[in-house]
Image (tube, rainbow, N blue to C red):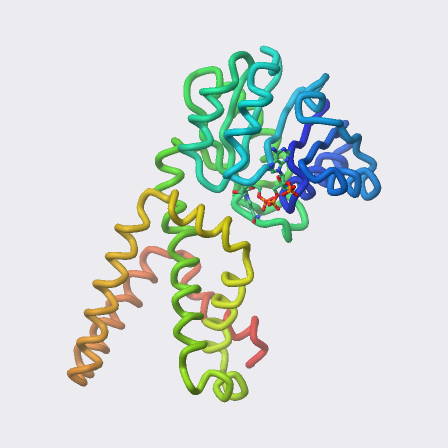
Length: 289
Ligand SMILES: NC(=O)c1ccc[n+]([C@@H]2O[C@H](COP(=O)([O-])OP(=O)(O)OC[C@H]3O[C@@H](n4cnc5c(N)ncnc54)[C@H](OP(=O)(O)O)[C@@H]3O)[C@@H](O)[C@H]2O)c1
C-alpha cells in the first residue's frame, strides 16, 4: 500500500509519521520543499518534486493542505487521478471540500474525512474521526477506511458533509468563540495580572481555554469560523443566554439564579454520561487536590 501525503504542515507531518510507522510506503509533497525534506529525514518517506508526481503509484492520496489551498491543489491534480486511486481531504469543514473533490476529480474515488484531533495526538487510538461519503462508491470505500481506522483504535463516525459542518459549529466554532471572547475580556480587565497569581482551578480552566484557542493560527481559525454554517445561530443563542443570566445578576435574583443553575446541572447530568467525572477531572488537571 502506497500513500501520497500532499501538504507537509502540522497534519501532513502527523499522517506521514503514522503511515510510515504502519509500514506503508509514503511519498510526500509540499509547497515549501524543505518541510517535505525534513519528513524524509525524520521518517524516511519519499519526496516528490511536485504534487502531480506524488500521485504516481499511490493507492491513497491524502490532501493535508490548508483549506484555502484546496481548490488550487485539486485543480492541479484532479485530472491526473486514476480510476483505482482514492483522494481524501482532511479539512475541518466538509461541505466545501467535498464539493471541490467532486468538481475536480474526474476519475477515481473521493472521500471527505475529518480527523477531529490535532497534531499533538500520539496515535489514532481513542481519537474521533469523521467520514462524509456521498453516493455508493464513496460509501463502499468509507466502509473499508472505517475498518482500517477502527483496527487502529479510532472512533469513527459517518455523517453527511452538511451534518458534519452543523456539528462542528458546536464542537469547534463555539469553544473557539467562547475562548477568544473570554481571553479578550480577561486581558481588558484591570485585575488580569493580579488574578493570575491567585486563580484557582475554575479560573485556570478558563485561562487555559483562552490561551489554547488564541495560540492557534488566526487565518485558519477565521477561515474555519466564517465557513461553519451554524455559527450565527449558536452565537445568537449564546448572546440570548448571556442576557438572561445577566438580568438575574443585575436584579440580584438569587432564587432564579440558583433555580437556573439546578436546571443546567440536571440537564447536563441527564445528557452527558461523563458529567460526574468532570468536576474531579478539572481539579486533577490543575493539581488543586
Ligand atoms: N491543525 C489541526 O489541528 C487540524 C486538525 C484536523 C484537521 N485539520 C485540517 O488539516 C488541514 C491542514 O491543516 P494544518 O494544520 O496541517 O495546516 P498547515 O500546518 O498550515 O499545513 C498546510 C500545508 O499545506 C501546504 N500547502 C499549501 N498549499 C499547497 C500546495 N499548493 N501544494 C502543496 N502543499 C501546499 C502548506 O505549505 P507551506 O508550508 O508552504 O505553507 C503547509 O505545509 C486543514 O484542512 C485543516 O482544516 C487541521
